[in-house]
Amino acid sequence: MTVENNVYADTAYRGSQCTSINEIYQASMLEHLRIDSQLIWYNQYSFKNPINWQFPSYWYREFNLQYQSSSFPEHWAWSEKAFKTSFEEGTSSEFFFVLLGLPASFLSFPMAWIWIIACWAAFIVGSAIEMQFLPLKVFLIFGLLPPIVACFGTYLNYWLTDKSIRDFKRYRWNGEGCYRRTGKVKHAYIGEANFTDCVPVVEHNVMTNGTTHLSLVLKYRHPENPYQSFEIQIFSGGTDYSQIEAAWDTLLRYMDVEQPLPDIPSLEPFRHLDPTTAAFDKAGKRGRPNNFWVDFYAKHSKPEWQDYFTQYDGLRSDNPIKVMEEEYRVMMNGFAPYVPPYIPEEVYQQRLKATQDADDMDIKLTEETEAS
Image 1 (cartoon, rainbow, N blue to C red):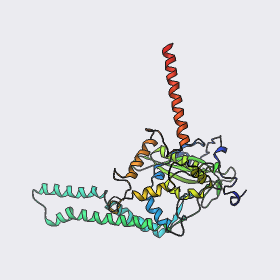
Image 2 (cartoon, helix red, strand yellow; image 1 turned 90 degrees about the vertical axis):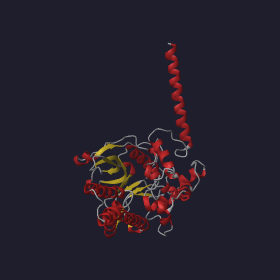
Image 3 (spheres, rainbow, N blue to C red; image 1 turned 180 degrees about the vertical axis):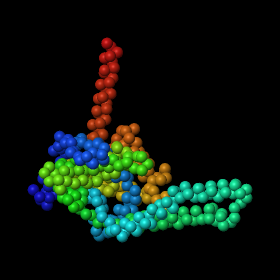
Image 4 (cartoon, helix red, strand yellow; image 1 turned 180 degrees about the horizontal axis):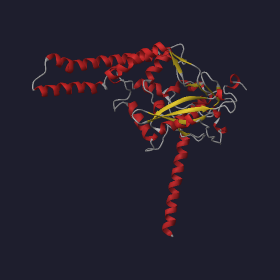
């Protein structure tokens, strides 16, 4: 059976055929130093998505620019066909953005307040030591010049960010990623393997400040040919392990052709193109309008001046996107139960019934203990 004849190939991953054996990845000595833990395969999903996949920064701006392009979704990381994990950038473009990006980030607000206050403090301390107001030249250098430079740096940072978003065509997808319709995982240069033959591991990298940066990595090791072994970086979760677990849950649901596409903003434009997802939405099981994320971001898009000075989505506490993100984070940390539309209605009812049954059992055991 080919993909053309039935959309999904025979090799496509199906949760009902999920492997029941969690094989231990045979890592080399060097790999053992980096591997923090190994995740397991399962088909009872938690329906959790990582925060930066659920609420990605600048999503609406990036989507608007790319959607208007005739090449969409060539430069978009998600589609109903593949999750693209690696894009290549021209060396000259990368050098240009690094050369200007680092100083612009340091000179722009809000980081600029650190060295501005340091300059002002130096001027005040110097005046106190000299017991008189320092010369006008010193005041101009330490008092007025830092805010002017910070304003220029903020504008430069905004210009670079805007140019980076608009200049998305400088990135080229090298074919590396996870393919939903075929159930394959492909490395850009080494080869491909079945999704079920890969092992999910969590790698840790110790940062200079002593914290550990966690990453979800798919590793494949050919049983006979070591040259066909490879690894693919899926997700970087910082120091939050729950984000890594949510990313693995999202990837499993994405590759499982028996499940609809994960309900994240980046995949919403492709839901009607995936047969399983289209049937799910047509049955009214999604719990959201067809263009929920696009309309939500368009309605609550921040004014231009806020992007100019902060360069950070959701900085204001009254931003509706920030409010929704915080509510989701509370659920992610286990302080609130998951409710629709974050999980399907039937899953919510099943978990609610399980909780009620557990409470009834506790009450029954308590009454029996008291009676005895």
